Amino acid sequence: MPLTDTAVRQAKPADKARKMADERGMYLLIQPSGAKLWRLDYRFDGKRKTLALGAYPDVSLAAARKARDQARAQLAAGDDPGAVRKAEKAARVLAVANSFEAVAREWYGRQVATWAPSHSSKVIGLLERDLFPWLGSSPVADITPVELLTTLRRIEARGAVDTAHRGKQVAGQVFRYAIATGRGERDPSADLRGALAPPKGAHFAAITDEAEIGALLRAIDAFHGTLIVRCAIRLAPMLFVRPGELRQMEWAEVDLESAEWSIPSDKMKKRRDHIVPLPHQAVAILRELEPFTGHGRYVFRGSRDYARPMSDAAINAALRRMGYDTRTEITGHGFRAMARTVLHEQLGVDVAVIEHQLAHRVPDTLGTAYNRTRFLTQRKAMMQRWADWLDQVRKGADVISIGLSLRA
Image (cartoon, rainbow, N blue to C red; front, side, top):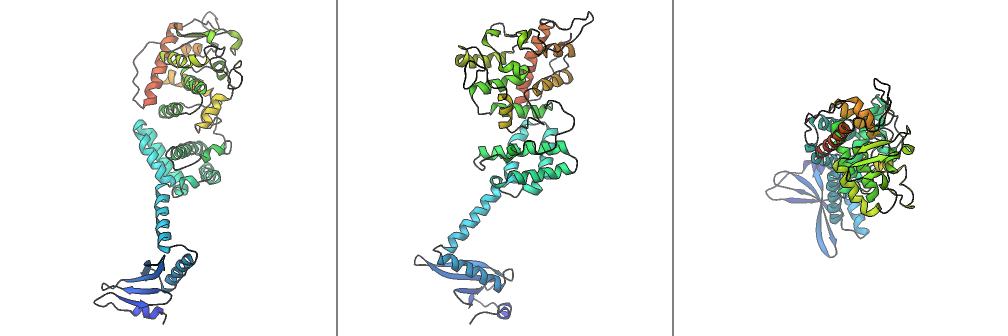
């Protein structure tokens, strides 16, 4: 005879565990302790098995019967309900381990030692405040561009446009970490280019925060592209020339022994010859590339036509592949603003020295607009100091001013 709610509620324990049968293999197991447990006996592949359906009163008689019917339907389909239960539990455990929050905290834990405390607190604050409440419990591999955009627009809606862009960048780094560790297949943030309102004020997007520069340099080191593009993107922040000047660099213009790159006037924006001192790090990169392209004209030759330089979009394309938004975060041209800001404000280099290296017009007291060799000694020292500073920041080390005199 089937059980009733009243019979279940009034059932008393005995000295030994006892069963109260319901129907279709289900029964209530009453323990001497008073616990009331729903169980289902069934046979699969000729073996007798028992499936736990929950405990009364948390699971009512009606709910237990529903679980029983579901299990019997699985049996009818040729599945073992116990095996299905274990697989579902394993999937839930895996989903928790692979949730956006779990992956993000793991990524954060691996990065935080290389960040300045101010930067690390900003990143974890952004994650906990703006991303975890909406994305945290979702499996990182299941998050769609639309879900990410909806989350970012919540930030944007409160007027924090820059924070929304920062959220996109941080989320992109988490997704790329998930891909690298085998828990994701793609970065949905890459599909959101242009979807957010542009931040206020900037011309060429640039990164000037020390910790963020370090993160960018480490992303460049980890970039998986062709050797030519990898070398170009490594030189771009170090030499901070215009992207068009970098991609059209010719071997005939480069003197690796003297560590100088002489750019002719017809390639310069202001139509003036220009000298770029090469720090030893830049010379090492060019020597690495020389066996591959040194027999031709261009240092960074095209991928299809060796007689032409690489595409003018190559640097920005590489940055986008790294997850950076080239409209709002950093562009190939933005490395110039990065260098100018840090060299002057943090390293204390005289503006006139920096501006000459940028090939800007800097009139002196005699009205001279530009001289390709002016401040060349100071510029050589500045370029080496800048490359050394980038190395330190890339490693996450504290950067200490060494007091070089680079004044005009």
